[in-house]
Length: 250
Image (cartoon, rainbow, N blue to C red; front, side, top):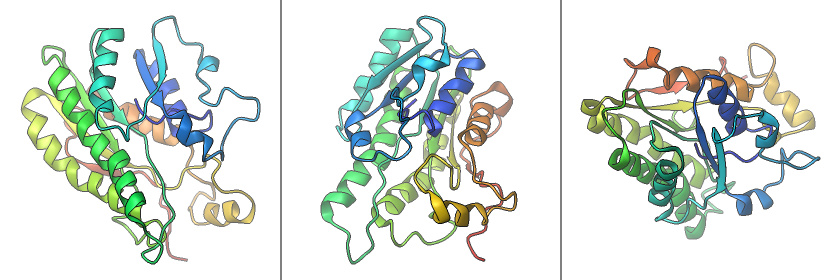
């Protein structure tokens, strides 16, 4: 599982849920990126929050991996197999965000968002397919997109473009792997309260949900835990908008 860096984040909630469901988890984050985006950090340290999860020995591994490196996905999958003996599930929860409009967009940021968000996701699925033992049932891939297919994200162009690629690749990856008993789906979790907005901005977004609250990391974890379970074996090639009825228009 990628994108595990903050105790308040989606990744930490996913780890906790999968451990509770009996999975061994190999989690990754990228400390250098987190150092430049400090929102949501735990003031007491232990930003990944993994030590607080009480996982049994050898059930939880955490390493720092730079997915902008094109060789990193294959190395990561090899490390998982080496450490845990097999790989059954890939959850590509990582993301590089960028607030650039068309007037502001740079070649560097377009390339970096593409590399981290879109390219790394494809290469993770490729490496997983190469190393997965099809004699083990229940191969699962869960990718993460955003809401760019539901409404414009004009102020986050590099991010929206790269996440749009994930949305569009899901069906094709699923089709390629379906005959091997591996499903590929994507989740758009909508706005999730991981600490990136505060004050009136936070309250304004909360009012855009019918429930009057933001999505929480646990809301995302429940959807993903179901998608990787045996019960969801008939769900394949889908992009699931799990947004709690989020209203983009007043």
